[in-house]
Image (cartoon, rainbow, N blue to C red; front, side, top):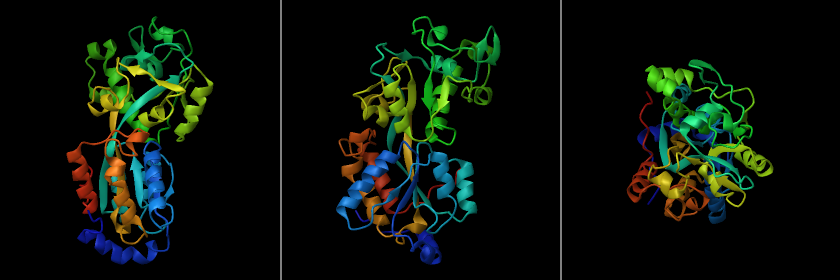
Length: 345
C-alpha cells in the first residue's frame, strides 16, 4: 500500500512550511518511554533497509513529547511523538495555537502497566488494586478519617504480605505511564476501599482525592528512563517498579511480574482485557512534515508493516500486544491517507 497520499490541508501547510522543515535530514521522534523501544526498533529496521539517515529517537515522556511536538511546524519541532495515553484536550489546544492543525492519531497496540520485582524475592506477589492504592496513595482511610498515609511496610496493609518496607519506583508526573497508572490503578483501587464505597463518594471526589502519589519516601520518582528502574530492581530484591509490560517481558531472566487481582500481565491477558491495568499505545504524526522531511513516508510505511505490527512481528517480540487484523487494516488506511484526528474536547 502506498503511503504517499496527503490530505488537502497537509499539502497547504507543506507549501508554507517546506523551506523551514527541509533543512533537517533526519526524522525526529520524541515522547513516551514506553513507546520508545518500539519506535527505536522500527528506526533500526528503517535504517538497515534504506539509504536515509537513521531517525533521531528521544525518550522525553509523553507530556514532554507533546510539548515539543505541539510547539510548531519546521525543523525545530518533532515529526512524530509517542504516547502511552491519548492526547489531552489541553495538548491539542497547544498544537492548534502553534499552527499544528493536521495530526494523525495512530494506536499501534496495547500495553499492560506492570509492577515487577526481582526474581531474588521469593514471595508470590499478588496485590489487589485497593492494596496498591493503600501502599502508594498520599492519603488513605485511617481510623475512619481521610488522612496522610501512615503505612511503611506491606504487612501493615495486609498480614499475608511480607513485613518489608514499601519501596516502589515509578515514573514522574510528565509520563503517560504515570497518568495511566493513576487513572487505571490508583483511582480504581481507591474506589474499591470500603471507606469510599460506604461513604458514597463520587468519581469527582475520587479524582480529586485519590490521584496523588505519596511523597514521604515509599514511592520514588525514578525519572523517564525505565531501564534505570530495571537496574535498581535487579540490585534490590525488595524494591518494586512500575513500567510498561515490555520492560518486564525483556527482563524476565531477572524480574518477575506482580500479579494484580490474581492476573499476571501477559500477551493474552492484556489483549483480552482480563489483566486489570491495560492501556492503548499511540503515536501522533505531524502531517505538515510528510513529503518534506526525507524518508518520513518510508519510515511510516515500515512502522505500519505487518513485519512490525502483526502478532509475531518484531514489535510483539519486544512486548507490544498487537491489534486485531481488522484494526491494523483500519490503522494502516488512516495513516496512509493522513486522516486528521478530530478535535479533542
